Length: 101
Image (cartoon, rainbow, N blue to C red; front, side):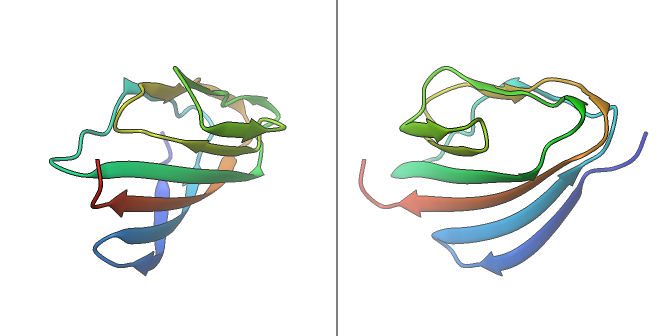
């Protein structure tokens, strides 16, 4: 199976931006991203949707637009991506680890 390509575009202690390519056959199991302190926010933009599969699911979002732009709290809410049956999924992921709770 092909590997996920995670390219770091910006990496600061509280802000990271990654370009992530998920290949055909890949899926992301249901999980959350616990943080030791503070709050964790993610703003994900799907740049390329796979032809089949690769559907993002989460318990809650702050907002979601056209199943392509999602702003959510990965530390509080479980999330997953269904198996990519055909094609690939390319995602711009902007993560903010805020000091407040």
